[in-house]
Amino acid sequence: MPTVSQSDNPNVTKTSPGLMMDEFIPLVSFEKDGLKVINPAKLIFEHEEEEIAYNDKEDHELSEHIDNEHKRIYRVYQRTTSEKEKISFPFSITKGNKDSDDDDGIITVRLSEEIEGVTITSEQEFTATYDSKYNLELELKLEEPKEFYIDFYAKDDEDDEWNIGELKNVHCGRVKIVVHYKNEWEFDKTQIAKIRKYAIANNLKYNGPGDQNRYHHCTDTHKHIIYKLLDKPSGLDLGKDQNHEAVRLVPKDFEKAGESTTDGVRSKLISSTYAETSKTFTVMDTDNNEVIYNGKAGNTDKDLIGFKESPIEYMKSKCPDDGFYCFIGAYNADYHSFTIIVNKSGSKFSFEFIDQIFGVSSKKGAELEDFFLTYIQAWKSNFPMKLELYQLRNKKK
Image (cartoon, rainbow, N blue to C red; front, side):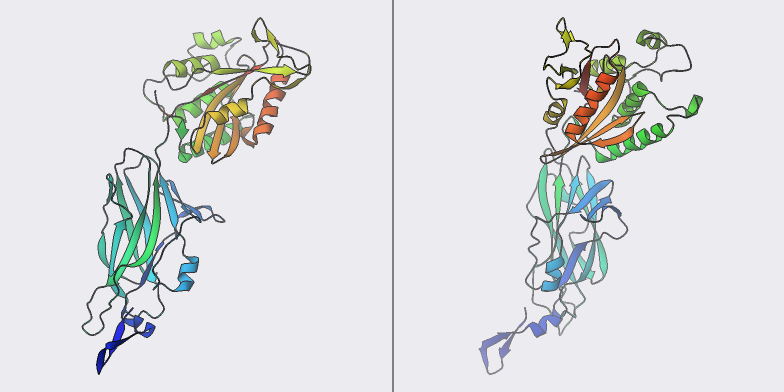
């Protein structure tokens, strides 16, 4: 803040907020206008196919020279990025102090710490004016996850002979960057959006005509989901779509025709290391007995009360970090197959059941487990009563 000295005694000084008129005091804020709104209540937006969200746990640490009314409502936004080498972040530059009449100055952009593998490629020091824009651009070549801030500092550009501001390093803006590298099981939100769109469209054709308008049956539904999640990598051939106009009585009939089967898709993914070995979940009857025959899943006319081992807890244990995970499942010796998407967020898990009959159905963990049991019992005729699950990788092991 500017200081004046008494004319007959230079040692007597006074600091006056009235002289803020000579200072350039901007406020650099996330520019959300024009961006896709994902969640207006939680202030979550989309930019370059990634989320930018208000982080209410972060302190902006803005300069004391920024008006309190601005500081009270200033929000630190966080961008979480995954496996992108170049990202950008749009900002607006406005007046941060109502007494400031110097409407231009210099803004410096700095990393909160020196980080090898992070480079600011946009201008790091530039002349700015109030009511202008700035697009932050970063190059990321990190080898491990990292969290850091980008901070903005302002000073006068000293272009006025008589009214030169004295303030330096006025902290006038902040954003947080979280660089997250997916583990081998995790899928992007954009990939999940693609398979939801496909599954909904496929479900709408469920009672439609044949030929090109016909929906995919269960095996082909999860096969096409897998192709979309993996971007259909070269060398991965999971078979032709099943021809349900032809006579196909058993899985071997499909195999002879070069068409997909649930076990064929499973075996190919496991052998090519796009998936781990599947796990079988047996069921318990009302006498609390495991339904098995000769050590393998069996059959019963009794009602079911649950699984010997919870498939929900199993899936939760296979999701190490926050994000989306994909499991392929089948009931009763592959009588019907489906896809499960698990979204982990902290200690919370949400589940989506996807097939050609239901499309995309959101379920809680206990609800999904009961759903499994209902259809295992409904489709028990001549089939061992069991659930089989395997988890899809995002790339070869």
